[in-house]
View 1: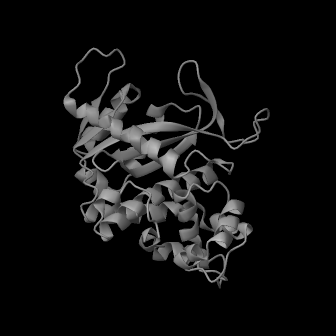
View 2: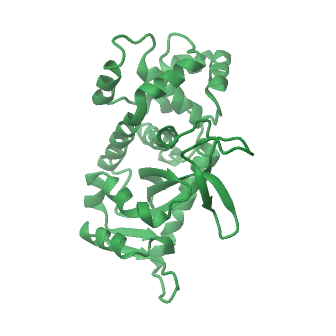
View 3: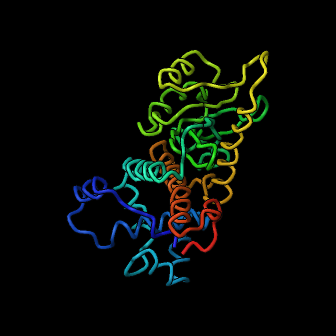
Length: 289
C-alpha cells in the first residue's frame, strides 16, 4: 500500500539515463526497495537482499522482476547521487497542495548522527567531533530540518559535519525550503541556538514571525512556542521507525542521501495513508504493503 506513493520525477529519470542507456532493473523498483529498507529498519543492503529473498511479496510490491544483488543498490545510490533531493521536494509540494501539510508554522532543530566508523580510528574524513551537551561528545554529523508542527513531517533537510553550530545552517536551510513553504510560512519556532539577528531578519523577510528562546531566557515565551517539540518527535520517530541513526555509509554526500531517503520515507507513509483514507496511520508504520 505505502509503496504505491513512491514516484521518480522525470528529471531524475533523465539524469539516470545519462549514465546508463538501458536499465536491467527498473529504477522505481530499486527506489521502492530502498524506501522499504528504511520503513522496515533493515540496517544494510546485504540484509535487504536476504529479506527480499525471504519475502517474495515484497519483491512484487516493489515491481522488481527478481531480487537485486546488494551491490546493485550501491550502484543505484551512486547513480542517483544528489538527485535524491529532487525526489523529496515534489513529495513535499504534493503534500502541501493536498493540504496535508499546512506549513504555516514550522519548527527548526538539528540532531546528531554517529559516523559509520571504527571506534578507535576516525575513518570518515567528513565527520567531526561535536557536542550533544556540554559534557557529551559525539563523532559524526548533524541533520538539520524544518518540520511542520501540525503533522510532524520534515519539509526541508540539510546535513552538516558534527562540529558546526546550528545557527550557521539556519538561514541556508530556510532558503533551501521550497517557495510554496516560504509563502505559506507564518511562524518559525526554534530554541536558543537560533536566537540570531541574521535568522530573525531572514524570517521577517519572508513575512513570518520568529519565536525563539533567548540565551539568557529574559523574556516569557507565548504558548505557541510549545509546538516546537514537534521537531523533537519528528527526529525520534525517524530514528526509531525509519533507520535514520543507522549509518552504513561514509562521506557527507552519502550521509545526506541517507537522511533524505529517511525523510522521503516519512512523507511517502503520510501520503499513502491519506490516499487510502487512513489519515490516522500517517505516522504509523503498519500494513505497509
